[in-house]
Every structure is written in C-alpha cells, then in structure tokens.
Amino acid sequence: MEDAPAGSDTLVGMTTPSWPAWPLFDLRLGCRGVVLRPVREADLPLLAAIQPADWEHDPGAELLPALDLSQNRARLCYQDYWRSVGTWSPSSWCLQFAVESEGAVAGVQSLEAEQFPVLRTVGSGSWLIPAVRRRGIGVAMRLAVLGLAFDHLDALAAVTAATPDNAASLGVSRRIGYADNGVCLTNSGRGVVELIQLRLTAAAWRASGHAAEVTVTGFEPCRPWFGLPAPGPGRAADRTAAS
Ligand SMILES: CC(C)(COP(=O)(O)OP(=O)(O)OC[C@H]1O[C@@H](n2cnc3c(N)ncnc32)[C@H](O)[C@@H]1OP(=O)(O)O)[C@@H](O)C(=O)NCCC(=O)NCCS
Image (cartoon, rainbow, N blue to C red):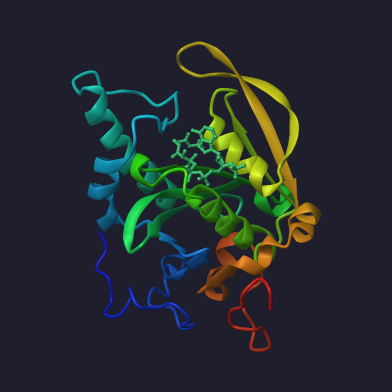
C-alpha cells in the first residue's frame, strides 16, 4: 500500500511534510525519552507478533471460526489499523502511534475522538510489551498524546475507562491527574462488566505543568485532518507545548 519517500523516517523538526497527501505520517511526539510516531503498514507484522495477551481488541469484533484466537488477534491488529486510516474523518478519528523506547518499538498508544469538532473530547488506548512495563513508559506515552490533544487540537477534556482490576491502566490515569467520573456498564463479550470512568479537563492539564514535557513536531499540515483551519503563513510552524 505505501512506499515511504526518501528521508521520511528522519523528519523530526521538519515542517515540510514528506507525505503531503497524508501528513499524519510525519507527526512525531516525545515525552520523557519516549518517541511516538504514527503506526504504518510496515509496522503491522511486528505489532501483531508482540501485542500482549492482556490487550483486548473490541469485544464485539467478529472472530473467524477457522482461525484460532492468536490468528484472530493478529488479523484484528491489521484491520484496526486499516480501519483507522481508511475511515478517517475530522469528526471521527483514531490515531495509532507506535511507541519507541530506547530505539525499539515497545507498544502502541492511540488517541481517538467521535464528533470531535463539537465535543472536543478525546479518548485513548494503549499497550506495552510486558518486558518494559512498570518503568513509567505508560505515563510518558499517555502524556505525549495528551499534549497533542490539549495543546494542539484544543481539546476540552480527555476521558478513559478501565475495569476495576486493571490497576495499570487506572494507575497511569490517576498518576496524570484524571478525576473519577463515575462508573458504567459494558458488554465485554464475556458478560456485563463495570468500568471505572475517569476524566481530565484542559484546565487540570494546564495546572499540572505536564505540557512542558511534551514535544510535538509535524503537526501544522495535519490541522485540516482534525477540522481545524489550514496553516496560514502567520502561524508558527511547530511548537513544543511549553513555547
Ligand atoms: C497500561 C500499561 C500501558 C501501563 O504501562 P506501564 O509503563 O507499566 O505503566 P507505568 O509504569 O507508567 O505506571 C503508571 C502507574 O500505574 C502503576 N502500575 C502500573 N502497573 C501496575 C500494576 N500491574 N499493578 C498496580 N499498579 C500498576 C504504577 O505503579 C504507576 O503508578 P505510580 O506512578 O503511582 O507509582 C501496561 O500495563 C499495559 O500494556 N497493560 C496491558 C494493556 C492494557 O490494559 N491497556 C490499558 C487499556 S486501554
């Protein structure tokens, strides 16, 4: 599907997109030594192979009966990517980032929204390979996408939800400053389960000071993808959140 133009992997800091028809591929986020770059088709074999067993795909996803669970999960990894790219619109989008730590891909962090121009609310999802967990990478990669959301997309709130036994997911959210926002029920595919909901407002984000830790490059050409006005000659090309 894609052939990377020369030099497209060395774009940090550049403002001219290597992918003018799909500038999202040139986005780069950084936080606390962790680098996030959009997932590309070439990443899929690795991501399908390393996705951890405790990462749950959409419980409503249809499984192909002739495939075992592992084969179905690998297939869903591909289809999640193609769906997110193929169905992108400013009102409904999901941006998946490959997370690189110490030069190697260690997981995925997604940022997503429905009716974003109206609701200005983002959600997120993430996974890491077990070998790198409990080192703060989960917090760093969530901070990175929150920096994109609050300081570049002008989001008003970020929401997330996790089952009460997902201490890691809840730990990331609470460490960052999300506030409890009630509970809800969902059909997990294995019965109805309770989800703890959390919410982080733009005001809480600004008060936290985390914005200064996040760098975002390659964003300006992406503005129309999020329903924002196209970059004009007077706009700063790119900025860290702190500047
Ligand atoms: C969620 C996930 C990405 C977190 O990554 P991580 O790098 O291990 O998290 P961090 O090291 O940044 O830890 C963040 C906080 O959670 C706590 N935490 C992490 N894992 C924990 C665990 N298994 N049990 C209890 N607390 C945990 C940490 O102590 C830390 O809290 P603190 O700063 O108050 O000490 C990772 O555990 C994972 O991939 N889980 C499987 C997939 C999943 O459930 N994803 C979330 C659903 S969207």
